[in-house]
Image (spheres, rainbow, N blue to C red):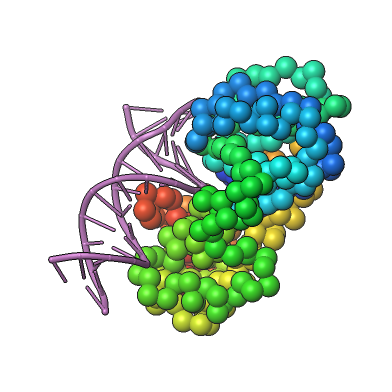
Length: 284
DNA sequence: AGCTGGTCCTGATGGC
DNA sequence: TGCCATCAGGACCAGC
């Protein structure tokens, strides 16, 4: 358990992004962004040089989420914020001094929002209003359905994997069928659905697709619920503590006994250079 | 030193 | 043969 919380703290998948959104939204929605401080523009992509000027003294209307992107809506455009693999956002007092890896601040009247991202795989992009709906942005246009969209189902999943021979784990991670499943929750969802991670996508029939769609939704919902209890960590925290204490069933449990079946020992396998955990006895 | 991870990009592969 | 979709691997980083 302690070991796992160390991992999770650096891995924003959909639940972490959603909990972040819920945590920061009350402090930024409807407030005027006075100015931005961009100390380090060299993120996954360069932060636009004119972004601070564009958004100074503009009211921030809404903080939305699409996949793992946070969408900060202004009247004249939208900021797309991605946390990459090590990013975190915190609401802090305006006078709080930045430390190393604190790359971007959004400064409001009474407090600021701060992006810390040691590995700089995150991003802050700008989509001007005149470029059309933000969902048409190149980073968003190819994304799959939201896992909590009522249209996401076994049938949807089966349509998405039709004719694709990649492993089901790789297809979940690809994000073009359903968004939000990262490396950890891919293992967890497949365990929940009792499906072996290296099963080729097109080998999954409707029954297993139904189970998997439900498992993805349930796994992510559980994680969001677990994270919701730590919302206070987003305010007036220096961000130094982990904020997810998810109880994983397989991830990081190599060699330990399976929680569901008697006799199974959790195995670790590298899939596409990514660690995958599963129970060889009850995942077929 | 080597491993870790989310996503985009590139170059390779395979089907029609 | 040509085109397109798909796929595996590489790159980007810092922390441990």
